[in-house]
Length: 337
Image (cartoon, rainbow, N blue to C red; front, side):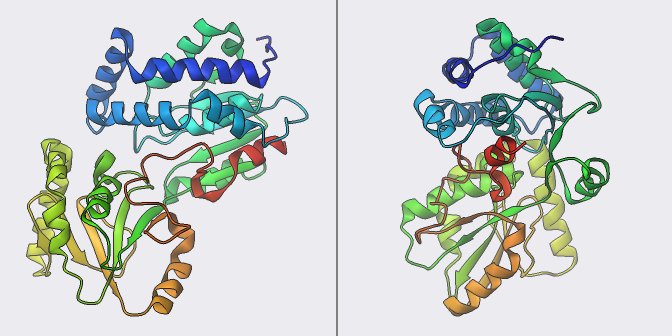
C-alpha cells in the first residue's frame, strides 16, 4: 500500500473535525456505541459518551493540538509504530494513536478484544475527510514489520511484551493506579469531585483513585455523605457482583470495614485495591507521607491533592494532550525514531 505523505496541519485539521463529531454522535456512531456496550457491558452509554466528550474537549481541540505539536521536532523519517491497545476503559488508546498520527508515522493497531468497534469507525471517518489516512492506520491480529512498539497491558502481559518487543524501540506500560491525599481541610466540592476520580469508568482505569491517604482521626463519613450521587455504579450488574463478592469475603474473614451498600472503605496499607473497594491509610507526619509516596511512585499514575503539582480533585479522568501515561513523553519517543 502506498503511503501518502501528510503534514501535521492536515492531520490536526481532520482530528479537530472528529472532535466536533464525537461530541454529538450521529446514528452511525450511536450504533457503534450500542454494539460496544453489548460486547462489553462495562462500556455503558454514559461512560462511553463521557470518554468521547473528554477526548473531544481535551485532545481534539485544534488550537490545543497546534500548540502541543509545535513543541516537537518532526521525525527524520516515517516509521511504522505497533500499538497494542488496552481495553480497561473506553477508547483508552486514543492518545497513543493521536501521537502517532501527528508525528507523521504509520499506526499498526492490535485492538483490545474488549474495545473493537470504535477505532475502525474512527478510521473510516478520517478517511472520509482525507484519503491519506487510508494507508496510515492499519488493524492487525498480529504486529508484523514494525519499527517501534507502544504496548499497554497488565503486569503479566508486560512480561510477554518485553520478551517479544524488547529488541525494538518501545514503550511498555503495565499496571498502575492513582491515590488521593487528604488533609482534612478539603471543601465539600473537592471531596465530591474526588468521587469522579474514584467512580468514573467504575474504577477500572489506572487514573482511577483506588487509595486515599488520610490524617489521623479523619472522619470517613464525609465520603459517604458526599458520594451518594455515584450510587449509579450499582446499576451495572458486573460492578454490583464485584461489590457483593468483596463484601462477602470481608464478612467471612471478620474484617472491619465501612460501607454504604455501593462501595467499601477499608484500612489497608496495600496500594492496589479490588474493584468496589477504596483503601485508606493513615499518615501521621508529612515527612512520613512523602517517604511512603516516594516508595510507591513507580506504581502511580496520578496523585490527587490540593497542593500544587498534583492532579486537582475531579480531574484524573480528563487528561490533556501533555498528560502522558506513566509520565513517559510519547511524542518525544516518536520524534527520536
